[in-house]
Image 1 (tube, one colour):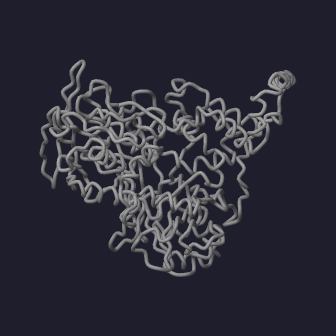
Image 2: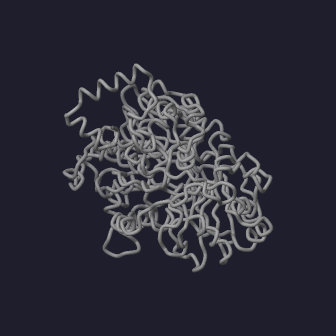
Length: 591
């Protein structure tokens, strides 16, 4: 497997890998990474679909990318996905997956047209004092010292950040700024999360720094992530005859470990309560989704809280990974990520408005008609003074194809599930759906004497507790995640958010799809390049732009410098006078 860039290899089709007709594939899980691996097996690996088996513990596919109408409960989407125009592996895949809504076009075509016609932006990123504009005004609000702390992190070697927390690198100059408000609520970082992951995010999305305050950097699907991404992939795979095995829990994968060679030999499964095994040969490839960010997630209802289930049980991703990791150090250290669910949980809730009483409050804040079919909030709106650090969003409506006319379906989440609310004096994890809706309505500015009535009669709200939703952000070091294809592997690979690949960042659709692509290309030795991570971190123009944007447009010459630094800067500016370097710095507003 090798990386490539440019359109020479992007448009090429690889030759059929040698011996592929004699191989089979078993894929553990049916999340985005697993489904992507299956797609690359049949498209680029040209493996017969009936030889590809997807083993899923749940009765439905999709993993974390869900979106369902549950009978007697309501609409539920545990999360949402923000996408980027430089998700190279994702767009490489979706150019080949047919739309299930528009005949003759791909998912990429459909997505591209939608976001060209209706580009994303937010008109109010944050509120304060019960629905009033917090006037973040697209500003990061960083002092020179805060900007320098971020710059210092950017240049710190990875190995110096192993097992370090963000709050060990940043102080109040960053942590009390608009920058951190935007960042933590958009990406779900907590102060105690990995400084290394923070650095990787800054590098990965350096080209989008200017678009963070108003979300112009982002793109969204038309419907929820399940209907817009997962269902087209399922239909595509079914058209090739790929085999789906639901209600099949993977207890363990057993390996033959030799000094220079590692072979997956057996898969232990629980199917309908009965333990079975699948024996593997070297021609049987297995792709393992280890860990799981939505493992142990639970739903409440309008009138019941979502229970907090932190116990790791057999048949789940964490227990399986522990059993696999016990067999070889190269298979990672799952307990670095799942040892403390108090540090990796947050809660979400899906709210469905039932009449015309709540939508005007949404419209007042987002400043758009939420029933227009176009961008509504344009990303999350954060209640800056919320004890739960509550954020909420309404994407394009309808969010579900089956959604009744006149209803809105939105998403609420809180980073601090253990703090009492401002209006509902309970922790978020103790609250029913109705009570979460009441807290949200309070921060929207609904008169207090109307809040309970609206939450009970004008909305249906389903809470969701996710104990391990940001487990991948826990402080870590090299080797804590297994490589996509560990050294010496003959017939197995790891895929998903807890597999290790270079330069890309987890908690993105791209990371899942990239690991699936790299796994398939490596094990089948496909002779085509995997698109490299977009190289904006190596583009001097993006670096210059981000430097100015991070400081809210202030020029380098406006920095507060000491006497010696001022003299040094003057000397540098003299030396570049009349050169292309001076032109470049002026073009990007540094001087």
